[in-house]
Image 1 (cartoon, rainbow, N blue to C red):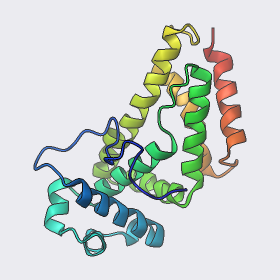
Image 2 (tube, rainbow, N blue to C red; image 1 turned 90 degrees about the vertical axis):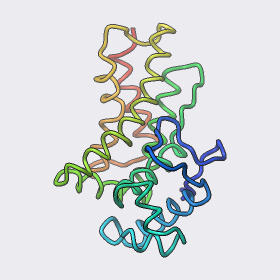
Image 3 (cartoon, helix red, strand yellow; image 1 turned 60 degrees about the horizontal axis):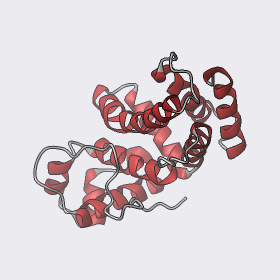
Length: 207
C-alpha cells in the first residue's frame, strides 16, 4: 500500500474531516506530521509512537502539534483516515453495487496492510480510553460512514436499494464483516471476500 498521506486532491485534505478550531495549519507541516506518524506507527506500533518522536522526525515543534491535535491518538486517527480515503474513496460509478464493491475492497486492502494491524491496536485502545474512543468514533468512523451514506442515498434515489431499510443498519451490513475479519482474523481480508460480503448484503437490501 502507498503510505503517503496525501490524497488525489493534492492538498492532503480529506473530505468529511472537519478542521479543528484554531490557527490555520501549514499543509506542508501537516503532511510532515502525518507522514512521521505513519512511519513511526509502522516501525513501533501505537505504543511506540509518541509526540516527541513525531516532532523529532517531522521537524514540527511539539507546541505546534498540540495546537492542531490534542494528543498522539488524534494524530494517528487523522493519519489513518487519510490512508483509508486513499484506499477507499467514493467511486461514484453510477451503480450502488459497484460503489459498495469498490469501497469494501478498499477497506479490505487497508485492513490487510501493516497499517490495518496497527489500526486494530487503536480500536483496542479505545475500549479502555474514552478520549481515544471519542476521537475514533467522532472523527474517523463518522467520516467514513458519511461517505458510505452518500453511496446508500444515491442507490435509494435510483431505485437500486430499499428505501424503507434503516441506512445505519445497511452500512453495518457492508462494513461490519470487514472489521470483524480484522479483529477476529478468522477469514481473509481480500477482494474475493469483499465481493461476497457485498453480494450477500445486496440480496437483502435490493428491491
